[in-house]
Structure formats: C-alpha cells, structure tokens
Amino acid sequence: MSIADLPRVYPLAQLLVFLRHKGMTARHIAFGAGVLFFLWASYHTFFSPQSFSFPGEIYVAPPTTTTPETWRYRAEQVKAAFIHAYHGYELHAWKSDELRPMSGTGQNNFNGWGVTVIDSLDTMYLMGLRDEFDRAVRFVEHSNFTQPASQGLYAPFFETVIRYLGGLLSAYALSRDTILLQRADDLGGLLSPAFGTDSGFPDFGVSTSTGERRGPPIGILAEIASCQLEYTYLAKETGKKRYFDLADNVVKTLSHANLSNVGGMPPTRWSNTLGTPFDTHLSVGAQADSAHEYLLKQYLLTAKTDRKSLEMYIRTTTHILTNLFYLSPTRHFLYVTDTTGNGHGVTRPSHTFEHLSCFLPGLLALGAHTLPLSDLASIGINLNDLAKNLSPESKIDYAKMSKYNLRDVHLWAAEGLAQACYLTYVDQPSGLGPDEIVIYGTPDRSKPNNQVLGGERWFDALEAWKRSGGRGTPPGLTPTAPVVYTEKERVYGPAKSRPLRDYGIRKTGYLLRPETLESFYILHRVTGDSRWREHGWTIFKSIVKQTKTPSGFASIRNVQLSPAIQQDDMPSYFTAETLKYLYLMFTDEDLIPLDKYVFNTEGHPLPIFEWSPQEKSGWNIS
Ligand code: DMJ
Image (cartoon, rainbow, N blue to C red; front, side, top):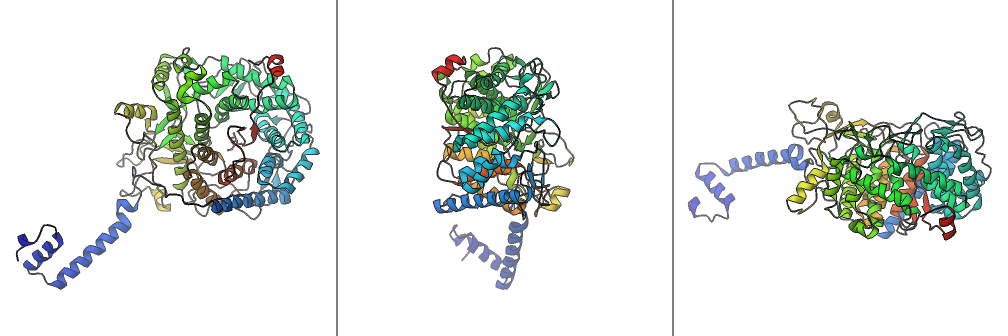
C-alpha cells in the first residue's frame, strides 16, 4: 500500500507508513514520539502562551453555583471578622480612636473621641450585635465633644463629619435611639463654626471648645463638599433650619461657579474666601472623590428635589466619562485617571489610577439605577443645554454623549472600571489591591525603561466602536486574565515570553480600604450579577489571610509580597465600611434597599426623606 492509497483522514497513519518507507524501525519511531511528547509537554508547562494569561485573552469567570446556605455562611464569616476586630479594639484600645492591631494598643488620631466606636455603630446594628451596640451607645451617652481634641485643639471638619456625625446619624436612623440624635445635634452644632469662611465653605478644622476655625485659604474639594448629606439629614431630624442652610449654601456656591474651562466638573482646589475654583486639576481620587459622590446622593436623599446637585452630577459624570476614562495599552482594561488643564482646552492626564477611585463604579451604577438616564428629557434635562456655558471642546463632548443611551454608557463604565479594580487585586501575590498604580504606555521591549505613560481615551474608542456598528462588547468591558509576576519578574521585569501587566505600582500598600468592595456591593444589588459577590468573597479571603492579627486586622505595606508585611494600624473605616459592605453583599436579605437609603462616604446609610410642605415653604426649598 502506498501513502497515496491511505485515506486523507488518516494523516498519522500516512506519516507512519512514510517513516517505515524511509527505513525507520518501530523503536526509532517510538523514541522520536517520546522526545516530541516531552518537548510538547515542557513547552505547554513552562513556555506556552496558554499557560500564561496573555493580554487580550478573554477571562471567563467560572459560573457561580453558590447556594444560599453558602452565602449565609460567608456573611457569618464576615460577621466573625467584625467581632474579632471590634472585640480586639474593645480589649486593647477602648476609648482610643483606633486599634494598633500588631502591638495591641490604641492611638488617638481623630480627636480622641473613640472614632472606632462611633464609626462602627451601624455595622453592629445591621449585624445584630446587640450587646456591642448597647455598650457603644452607653459610651456615646457619656461622650463630650467639647473637650479639646487630643491631637491638638482643632477637629478636622471633613473626617469628623463623615465618621462621627455620619456614624451617629446612621445609627440613630436605624435604631431610633434618641441619645444618638442628641449627640449628633451637639456635634453638628459644635462643628458648624467651620462654615464661617467668607464663601460659606467649611474650613479645614474647628475647635469644638472655642469655635475658632483653622485652615488654609485654599480648600480641598472633598473636604469642602462632603457634608451636605449629614447636615441636611440633621436638619430634617432636628427641625433646625440653620443646618439645612449651611449645607444648601455649599451646594449653591458650587452650582454658581464658573466651570466653563473644566468641562463642568468641579476641580480639586477652591478659594474658601471667594467660593471659586482655584485650579484646573480634575480627579475622582484623593481630595475630590466624595464631592462627586455627594452630588448624586444629595439629590437622592432629598427624594429627588435638590435639582442643582443633580445637574452638577450629570455634568461631572459626562466630563469624567468623556475625558478621564482611558484604556490600558496592552490588556485594554478600563481605568480612570486625573487631568490637569492649561485653562485653554489642553489637558494632560497623569495616568495614575488610585484605589480611592474604585468607589466610582458603585456611584455610576447607583445613578443608572435611580435616575432616568435613558430619558433625561422626562425630567427636563438636556445634555446640550447643560453644556451651554462650557468651552467649545466640552460642547462637542456633551453633544457626542447625547447620541448615546446614557444609562448604557454609565453601566458600561461601571462594569469595566469595577473589573479593572478587581484586576489590580488578583494580579498580586497577596490577592490585595495596591493603593495607586500608574499605567504605562504602549510597551517597547527594546527600551526597558520606556517611560511613556497611558493608553487611549476610552470615549474615542467608544466612538470608533459605535461608528463601526457597535457590535459585540464595548471597549474596556472584556474581562482580562490576571498576570501575577513572580518575585524575580517583579525585580528584573518579565521574560519576553511573558505578558506585560501594563502598569507599575506607585503606592504598594493595601490600607484595608473599602472602595472596590463598595462598588461590588452596589453592582450586585443593581445588576443581580453574582460575579460581583464572588469577587467580593475572593477578596475577603485574601483580607483574612494577609491582614489578620491576634487582636484585629492590619494594613499591609506591599501587596506584591505573600505573606504580606503588616503595619500597626486598623483604620476605623475598616469596621465602618469594608466589613459592612462585605456583609451586606453576602446577605441575601436586602437590609438597606437602595431606593430607601443613601450611604454617606464613610458607608453610613441615611434614609431618603421627603420635605414636608411646612419645611418647603418655611425653609425656602423649591
Ligand atoms: C474613607 O474614610 C471614606 O470612604 C473617604 O471618603 C475616603 N477614604 C476612606 C476609605 O478609603
């Protein structure tokens, strides 16, 4: 039989006959096959692209078949973690602000009024920890906020509002224990001299014993514009108009500002004297984050009456989505960065991507869930009208955005960015996300120190995708496989056969921050997609593995090391936010329905309320 006689469907048989024809014995053939198999197996074990997660490869999350019993168990695990942390605080640091979880001591870094107790009140309540809650309420009952803060005479206004005032108000809203409202009223009053600047923006700090203010004349956006929820709800519950006026004045001053050269988005620095913007730095990260959050949430808290806040939210998110979102050059994941403008339409992105910015997917998803973004006209909003006083460049961006279904764009951005936040965790040997990364430019392996930064603007890619028919997954939404560098790769760079991760780590610590988990919680509630809470569980396991100490949980210094090196602090937001969002995410019961509550920026839920006709007319609320 000749080779040609064999059917074409038998290529292996053809090869064997051919080799025999050439005089090879069966033993030769078997040896050759063995060598080939060895080479093939080695290649696939050590070098094959498939054994590494190459950029662009689609990562498909395993289908989730987790049962309700398992979710209940997971929620209990989070509760156990809370108990471990809080009992550690009670035992080793009671009445101090925060626990030092390695040395088993306390530290006073937020006025010395026991911030961990007050920041954790509502978490205890939601977890059903009645004894701990009662002990904490008794502590609050005997608190005295007029005593000078232990770290100096001035209480930092922003931190005191979001942690203490927000904590008291939320615990009051859930439990209706009036002592909590009385203390909130005391504290709100003692802090209110901070608003005595010429603009009415709160100053950096205030003495609660003398009422003196302190702070630079240039204020930070997050610090001047993240008090509206707390003061408005305090006004509602106490009936005190002056609290409402203080918060409303901040909203009014922001809404009257000229933001024409910054795309309608409030920049990071403001004059506390004039109430006007002081720079053109636009960010959703440090020093800005919660101010954007409060635009949407103030509108929602007031049962959708604070229209100024709503319009600012739509402008701000339109500018963020068109100008601050980018795609990484290699793995094409979505990230959000900050920009600095020259005031004449030219802006420069830094291409840093902060963990703090990972609250944004949750905010965008919340907006998509609660606002009629697909039909803004139904509430009398038109994107082109909102751009009326903006620069020609911004008018073009807003006009382009108006051609989309806005709800889709907000949800795409939320999903893509949340995936990227998750990626920064699962890329690390510790399983925890770094505090700040910087995205590299298109890699040029021939120049190892190539410092070009950043990828393509997301909105440009979205426009191109739309022009080509908008088929398939929008840019930035395809889940990306993790790339975990070995210790050697971390030091010397990855081998040629290995994928590039397309970012460098600028701040290596994981500080027990909540933002990524907060977004997963909201995304899970809004979309019903279990993928988010599976991701939450993955992160929770890493938190326990890397950060648990005998008395609590500790921030870690470098997410690239496992086991991680811990540092001696447990911020109060860990029990206020991180563990609360995990618990709410895993609990099937919807303890905090998103159409009934808004979370302040420290994770404290406040109930949405309607103004009464008397309040509307007496307080001049339109
Ligand atoms: C928290 O105190 C708040 O969420 C704040 O708005 C931002 N930073 C921390 C947590 O990272």
